Length: 370
Image 1 (spheres, rainbow, N blue to C red):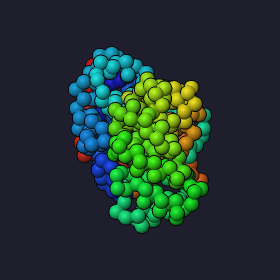
Image 2 (cartoon, rainbow, N blue to C red):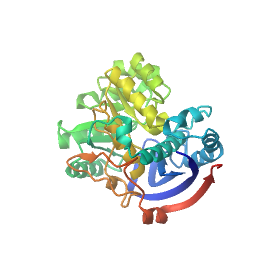
Image 3 (cartoon, helix red, strand yellow):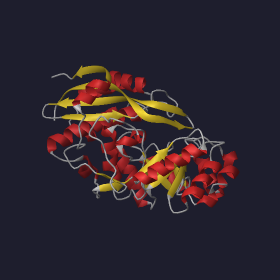
Image 4 (cartoon, rainbow, N blue to C red):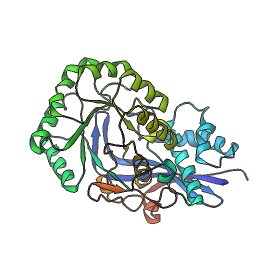
């Protein structure tokens, strides 16, 4: 495969409703889409960085700049011909994992489309569909939260995740349990909003039988997570802290988590995400696939990843209509609580031309030398 050039597209997709976490509220998906054009195929990637550096240090404008100025010249100079070459070629660039993931995803998609092989097959998927959970943001009231939970359970979602923060934790969890019972799979996500000094408050969640509490403390506080895991009964799951397979192995050895949320964008690519999966599987640690409000492009890749054998818990692989009235691709539709794993070449989905034209706000073409 010979890459002829790369197109960087910025798209703005309105969300069906605003999504609030402990780090802020989002009402629009400002996404950077990477299109790799090769001699015999093309491939698509999606950068999951947010518009502002409030969730991680990465943000969309910065990702665009670092891809254009620093990553693509290295990809071109290295005569990249496969997705597996991307990480080594970009290794000298520190951080920017979400940007690296978008580039790897697009190159890998082009490679697999040319070979007639699916993303899922390449990663080692063993299932044809994956169980789907839904993430519910912080709402204006408990009553509104209960209405949303009821709607998503009726839609067939198999697991409910509640965003929590100091002042919004025990009360909403108690209300959901009282309304819907102990049978529903329920977990919470703190997005690093607490400190170890809040251990007593977090222990008040123990009686509610949660699947897990996700990333309660700061991403660099491995020791604090290990201590918290000894102080509460609810299993601790790490998200933002897990930036590579090596870090995952260290966190497990330290006792900082008993469950891991895998996000390809956070670890630098889907190939590294597979390594995280393998490390966790070897240690008997269950994993699940997190989400970053991806369009259908990123969702296709996430569903393929979530079909690997170690993903034993429902992930944030929700249907397209959870976030968008119109997705970039044909929508992912929930069926009996599951999403199908695409089987076509590459991602198995492509952007809808008319939708892309409507939502694209800027485009930049970068030619590779002949």
